[in-house]
Image (cartoon, rainbow, N blue to C red; front, side, top):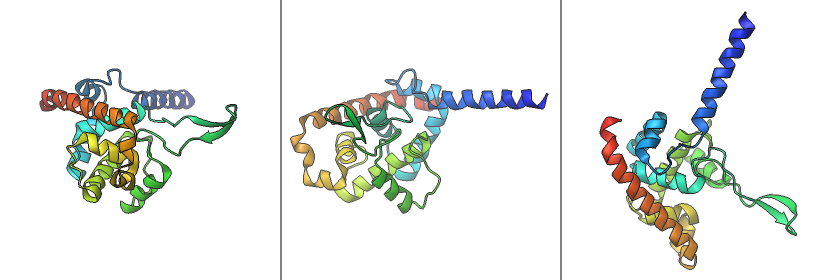
Length: 194
């Protein structure tokens, strides 16, 4: 009898954990996302309160980086096009944060038990990164375009202007900005009901 209850409990926990890590069904609509995943809304608002990071910009960056896949990884690198040599970078999870900057975030905030595949931790990381981008490079937290360029190129790369020669990246930053504006308009309409 106890074994059946234990198995049933484990099954329910497994299903709940699967449901919480799947990408939202309507990733283009912030209200739908927050309706489907209310814990995401709580995490976004905590990050807004802690770091001053607008939820719509944080969400737009995460969508661009991982399409809301908790275990997203960069593509593999191949020698001679056929022999796998590992991933092209150490980026991982919702924020696609590389090991080094994730380590800096953990150390600076005295965090031990955080994970890039945990949405709340990823949101806090992006908020921290945006806060640092403002203090290091003077980029407003409301400037989704330049915040994303900082996020992608790193603070040093941004200050050196490495993005200027990357037309594809400038286009991606425009998409992040447009999505943030779209999310922002949606967020204003549904925020009252959250």
